[in-house]
Amino acid sequence: MEYSRQAKRAITGATKLSKSLKHSYVGTEHLLISIIEQENSLAAKVLNSNGVTKDSLLKLVEELISPGGEVAIQERDGYTPKMEQLLITLLMKLKNVIQKQSVQSIYFLQ
Image 1 (cartoon, rainbow, N blue to C red):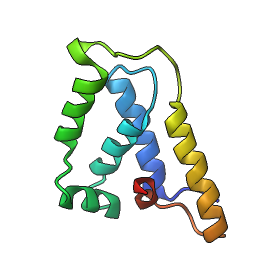
Image 2 (cartoon, rainbow, N blue to C red):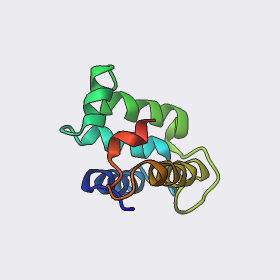
Image 3 (tube, rainbow, N blue to C red):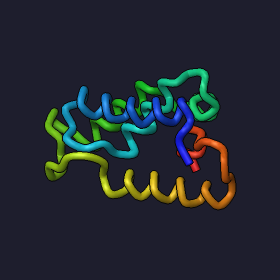
């Protein structure tokens, strides 16, 4: 099973966003912001219709993760354990439901 183009863009975008924020990890918060950047995706439309914006998420990440301008977690490279768990669980669930279709970015919101 493979991810759809939108899902791949969301994951790649999360990695790029993490680097641009000078975070040494990729977390679910980066993924959520990356999903919202894909304005035409169903996931972004669902988030936007519920009042979630890129700016509000970035502000929240800044306040919670990097108060005072520094990342407030232990240094680590790669995905956070929660992000890894999300990706693995998503693939396992979908493998049982959809045998030959790709994983869509909307499923990240579940």
